[in-house]
Length: 313
Length: 295
Image 1 (tube, rainbow over the protein chains, first blue to last red):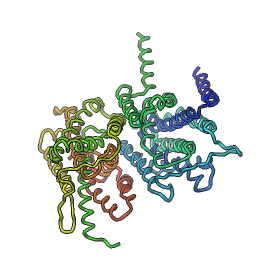
Image 2 (spheres, rainbow over the protein chains, first blue to last red):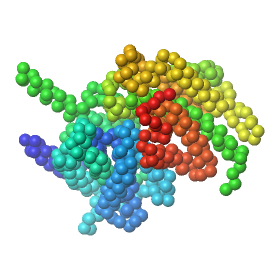
Image 3 (spheres, rainbow over the protein chains, first blue to last red):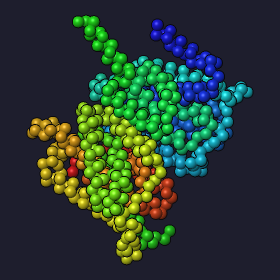
Image 4 (cartoon, rainbow over the protein chains, first blue to last red):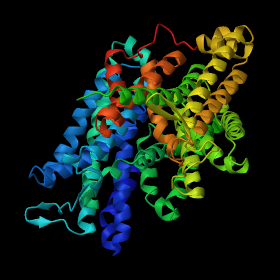
């Protein structure tokens, strides 16, 4: 039943561009998919391992710049760019993760935040590499076997395939032994340690994997946008990922993915001025944290448990 | 490079005043962390509200500086009261991540709400002091800067007296040092937490009001400074108010010197780089000794 629903959903996403001729809708769906992947990666660190990481924004930006620079400066192609968009953020994650994961969780939040801000400063100020505030425009369309991915529909399929791979990987990881230990870290780190498991390698793994997944998502997105500039590291993206994770329910894979895909439609429903939209996002965040801290998934779970209890009476 | 002593002195003086104002923000963050064990992401918005209050109230009082400062501080305090009563008081113990997400949401509402209402255009704030200043030998410093620094010093003196010599402040320190023991001797954590948030917000509002005539006033001004203040609080040791003040002063000077002699790029990156370095060497902050301390 669940498998059938999943297959229908995947098939629907696969044929979606054939049903609509509108590049606008396809574009909205591409960004929705990309945000969903990044949110699912954040869910791995925050929802599973319990580490509220703002560094995702930095990884997203580094991935975008790594992909763009590979093609525009170092003579590589798009696919090599994506490899670097995954490897560079993962390496950076290990570098900053090693010292900060040993600190208290309070400090971890601030350090990851500072890292994200520092990345934005570097993107803006290291003009000789990143071209400063002007950014790197004119990213060429990716090619494979002589075929150029020019139109939004072509790009949609790159995103779609990456989405299947990334989300599938994150799902399997979450269900595996490693994923279970990550969840245990969030629930009771001391108990886990008393069982002879060292949490640090698992935290580091969650951090690095989420960095790679986010980085590649960023890399694909800059080629869709055809430009990368320092606004790609705007705090807005981090807030979007966070809202998807919080509303979906931190720690729930399907909750986050489901809400992520639903929120594809949200920019449509909220076509006010940018400022007003952010006010609404902020209000959603506050209300969600106050009313349903477990997100939609947590809320549904509570309802299910309440129903079970009622049937026992 | 030839270092001109006048130039150096001028930079140092500017740095000290900047550092004092940073310290006002950081000390409030440390106070809130000490008492509530949360990090207030909406703290920068108190600064912004204080600065906007100054910008709007000054013309009403015919540019008179002191009444406007007073109004800004009171308004920021009220904002702190509302923040605590509506949102923070609902948080339980140990809900650290939840507190961050709630305060981020509030910060988004305030920041983008102000931007929506008043646009992102920077405003210049004029006071009755204008750009008048005093000459100290070869260096020159404006009155608004001197007053800003003076207000910060006065605020620290008041804070010190409050924390050490009144029941109000002792209760805050007691909660920060040992919550259970404080409960046992009859201190009510909710009241103390509310007082701490109001006090921190008022200090931050004072910083915003003092900064308004020195810098441009714009909705994003709080966010730019608050991220730096987080770094200061980390370097000083979370919840350590003295540490936050010392580090803020040092960093204000360091930034001013770096900005004077090197590229502006380094000025911005300095705080964050120093923070990451400190965390590598002393994960609990430079001045952290044993348990969390306040005052």
